[in-house]
Amino acid sequence: MPKLSIEGLRVTYGQIIGTENITFGVDAGETVALIGSNGAGKSSTLKAVLGMVTYRQGKITLDGRDLKGMKPSTRQRFVSLSFDFPEAAHEEAILVGETGVDAMVAKRLVGIANALRALRDHDLEEVASTRLLVYAATLIKDGCDPLRACRAALVETLTDDPETAEALNEVVSATFGR
Image 1 (tube, rainbow, N blue to C red):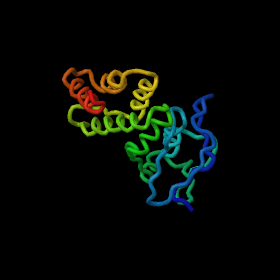
Image 2 (cartoon, rainbow, N blue to C red):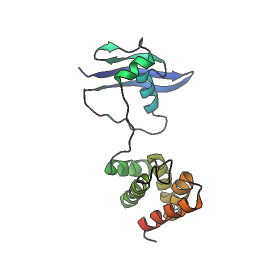
Image 3 (spheres, rainbow, N blue to C red):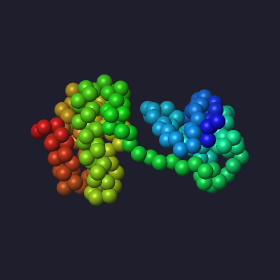
Image 4 (cartoon, rainbow, N blue to C red):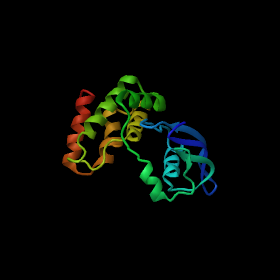
């Protein structure tokens, strides 16, 4: 029996469906990643587990105990969430799968993202998300020059400071060999 079990979960926001028939279990000590496109229900599922939204159908149990009647503050003592980026190979596969971009371009984009992520708490408050990489990959796939695509989707999104932008553009240029 899984430590955390979600069965037939349905979350709605008025007439909008956040999740539909989500079912999975998590064993003690297991790490699970919810991966999907925008609007797939990842956040709605997590919010339901934490009691941040009310779900209309389904059951969420922890050690067999139904969480539905439990206060959010109590639930949060039993369930923890950790947010991180996917492993490089998986993130590359996401880019190829979502955009159809060449695998080498995906590898370079993930390399740029990891270099920029290393700058968190130095010059950048925010870092390159997988979603921003998808935007850059889409631009490249549609024929945009990789430097311009990265500047539009990554650099200009992450900073408006000219010196920081110049440094980020140097990372992009070094990666794409120009």
